[in-house]
Length: 470
Image (cartoon, rainbow, N blue to C red; front, side):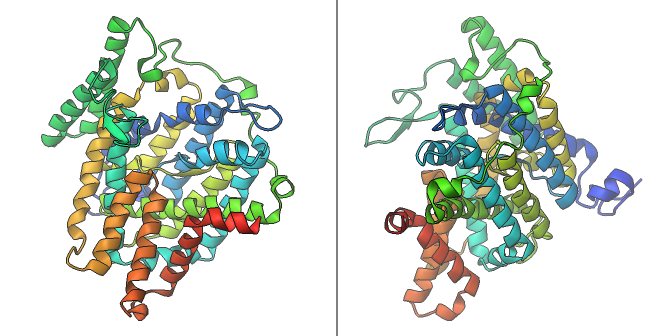
């Protein structure tokens, strides 16, 4: 028997499962949990990438689901095998919206041209990784700000959970912009199912039961199925459920989107506008992954004393390649998912967790109706609890040091308020550099932080940059 803290052979030796205090059963459960909290992307991505381009062409939903699952499966397996971290990858929310609503809807690009922007952006980021520039930026960030990034992501994850479940909704009014449920009341069966799942999962988690999040998701999904059939006349629960055939072999046409990208966007937009489009998406992708990796590494207790993730270059290389692959597959930029924290909360500590997630994504190409059964209301409780776990890092922020505490505070609040990890990191970096300069402490700022802060100034002012340069 292999002793805890030592490395065995075979699967255990390759993934360092015992060395990291885990076991195969825990890694598999963690992978199942992560997949179930991410399965929504298989059906949300086709909805977002659904509008007509300037030629009137729309992407077939079945084809988008197929390439979304294929890209996520391949890149997540690569992350597990190459980096040995429990991080899962899929089409990035927000990034797919930029493709659909900004590049196609706003700039008038065709779908292949928009995906070409993503391919170029991914290649540029990969070059920055290979030259170790991206790693240098990450290592220049003060440790308290790294802690605040994890906290901000935790609050962001919790907000995502509440919004996905319909517990928090917009009012369509300027004041207040948000409300409790619909019409400031908790109404309908979906909310009831979410509350059932949240309370059940909280109870299981408080008892420190192994697999609490996974059990909560499965139990809540079963409750959703029962409610759907008994009280909703079999209509789609939460707009997602499908209880038809469990397995369906995809048509060969579903794979036609692979390789359907074009670099014609340079001619369509012009060189300057094209570069600005690439820069905007690249900066978001660049720092989203940085924040996510730090937050997940902190949650998994895998960071070193300086708050750095060992072999971060491997994570960033796979993530950057995934961005380009996502564009090449017409699935939009693929990126590391903060929902990976749900599997980490279940004990996932190695790349085996990621491999399990990747295999499930590949299988979902054939079993998409089964994956579609999991409604938002069933996955949301896990996200809320993961948010709580990541928020506990707030104790590491030195609140009596305003030069660090104020940027940390901005990180924590801007992420959920703007629904963007990148915006939160940008607010932190710019305010940190500003406070140091304003107080005559320029020498205390790492040169890379100046570069990053300057990039974010351009990022936040991109409207004016675009206005005067194009």
